[in-house]
Length: 464
Ligand code: ADP
Image (cartoon, rainbow, N blue to C red; front, side, top):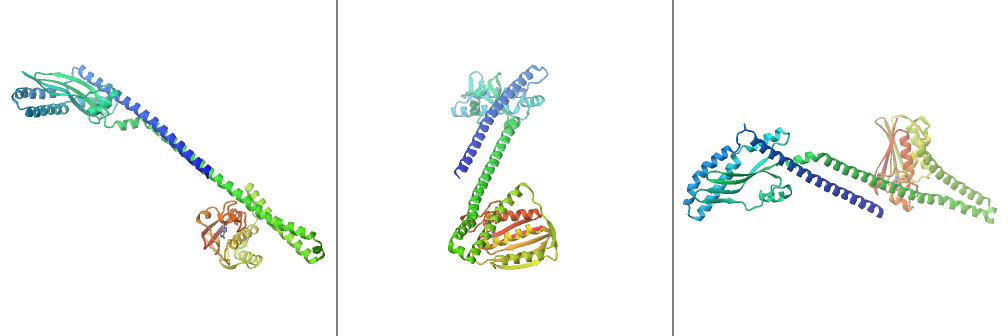
């Protein structure tokens, strides 16, 4: 139990370490790709800007903006000196700033140009743009400073955290251009940013191979761990079964041996030797115990032989009803009427190919278990019928029953239900294993249903 828990804890711990390591690696790759994308789009967009300026045929994408702002500043420059109330002046400055921002952001055509440039280079074309004014002065007889940015706008990738604060949470912003304009009535500094909202998707696409590999390796490791753990548990279960078997077998073999030893000692006694009837009785006892011993040893030998080779059946066509009647009645007399036995058959005269010796052993095993695992007077019902080209034999008892957990294993080699180990009910855990093997050799099967305390029903099906 302790060993099992250690294996389990160690296994889970190693898997967690593996997952953590993979996550760290993926995070690193993600950062790297993120940085690469950032640099790639920055150089592309700057390249686009220079291309645009170099090309003589192209029209200025800020032409409309300049036109609107020129007219606007022309009107505003006369208006501003007339405002004396500082509150009104502040209000006006705010309006001017917002107007400039709006026009810059909405009336420029550079974003369209950039988008088609990205597309022509085979890159993602969808992005958001944002133009941030860093300084705005209205210049007339006096200069009115409308806005001056206080914030530090970093330009290098490592400093993007700074940009994110400047651009309210947008970590993926790329600064494309810092621009300064001097016009008749205004001076303007602004910065043009682009932002890929789909960047996460793009990165996932780029690292999907390594992501898939990581996931695959985790799945493989978890599967191998589960298989190994299950095998370990199965081995442990088998080794426990073997230990139980050796204990039970020793116990089973000791009883007839002890009787034989005592009988031998009895024969040495002089007063016994004088009494012929006592000698005969002791000799019979020795004989009976030797047969029992022999049967036990044969059963073990036979089963170990089956393990190596498929055993040969000597099949004959028989009237199954007749055979069942014979087996059940000889069992009843053999055990000295140890149980209330009832039989009900409706085989419709079906004839089956069976090996009589093995089939008899199969039914006898079921019947003797029904008697053995009983805590009151055993009542056994034996039913027989045909169903889907099979003969079915059902042995029901009123015994101690088998728990759900034990039902799964009763046909396993050496398996004994937990109460079986305390020697209250003697056995080696081979009887039902034997039954299953015989049924399978006939092309059939055996199943069990049971309720603890109520009894068990074993059903054998053999095709005819
Ligand atoms: P054995 O009887 O030698 O222990 P078997 O293979 O015949 O081995 O049975 C395996 C286990 O199944 C038994 O230990 C017993 O716990 C359970 N068992 C078998 N038949 C019955 C039955 N009719 N009623 C209750 N338990 C049974």
